[in-house]
Structures are given as C-alpha cells and as structure tokens.
Image 1 (spheres, one colour):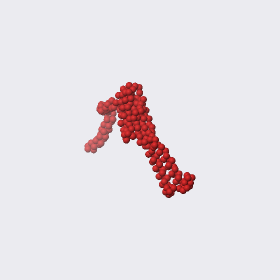
Image 2 (tube, helix red, strand yellow):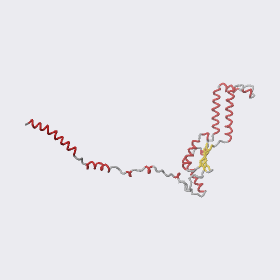
Image 3 (cartoon, helix red, strand yellow):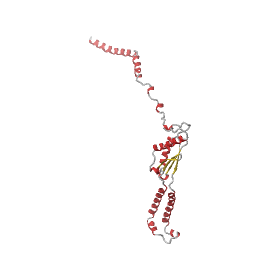
Length: 237
C-alpha cells in the first residue's frame, strides 16, 4: 500500500505541474494593468509650451547707437571724424580701434585716418641723418685712400680710431642713425576732430582718449551740428 501511494505521488505531481503550465500559457493577460502604466507616466511629462523657444532667446537687443536718425539715414550720416596720429610711434593700432568703435556706435559716420607729421625743422634734420650714416660707413669701408680724393693729404686722427674697430663703428653708426631718425620723425600726436572742430588732443592733454570719453565727445559734436542744421539734437540718448 505504501509503495502504491509513492508511485501515485511520483506520477501525479509531474502531471499536475504540466497541467498548470498549460493553463497559464493559454490564460489571457490582464490588459488594465499594462494600459494604466503608460497613462500614469504621461502626466509627469511637462507640456512643450513650458520651455522657452530659441526664437525668444536669440532676439537681438536694441541699443541706442543702432537706431536710425528718423530722417531716412543713420546717426553719423553726413559727419566726418579726422584722426591724425603719429605713424612712426606705432599709434596706428590705437587709431584703428577708435575708428571701429566710432563706426559701430555711429552708423554712417566717415572716419578718416592720417599721419600727423612732425615740425618742419625736425623733418629737415631727419633727412640729413641717412646721409651722415652712409658717409661714415663709406669712409670706414673705403680706407685711407679716399681722403686724397676728398682733398686731404692724410687721414685725420679720428679716422684711425674708427678704423681700429671697424665692425663696432659701422654697427654703432647704423643703430644711432636709426634711433635719431625715429626720434626726429615722431610727433607723439593723436589728434581727433569732428566736422573740422578738434574734440581731443594728445599733445595738449598728454594722454590718449578713452573709448567712452571719445564716443561722448563725438556724440556731443554731432548733436550740436544737428541742432544748428535744424534737426532735433536729442537723437543720442
């Protein structure tokens, strides 16, 4: 009897498991649970209209200097700014910076750059320096045979001092001459005028103008010229 029960258990248990698997395989899955899951997550997604659009972020700002004059032209139209600077003093970079700044703040403005020459006596002396340079170098390189052709029976005493150190004499003459030329050709000027009237002078103030300072000076001159011409001078704000 005990053996029959054990055999029945061994045969019945696998049969029960097989029937249970077959029942679960063909049983329909509950759809309500799966349908509610995505609906639950859908409420947590923010609506697209809550995010700022790229068009609102990239809108250009309206600066006062970019406004038109209201008479069919730009703020600086019909006005001329002259910047005279010392070219040998390496002031061209400063002049170009001021030119770009004025043209961006006053659309239509005509900005002219030109060299400010030194006084006439300095220019004349600057032309003599290269002649002395090449004269000294030529005498040192030619030797004592050049003096009889120049009307001297014998070379002067200073010639032998220069001849003793030929390379040092030539290099010193060349460097000293270039230094003197640069000094004589420089004017240290940075003069700004608007419509023929001077608004800033480096020779008088002993300094360069600031960008904001020069912008305000030019804006005042342009506003005054518009008032004189019968145009409202309150265009710059």
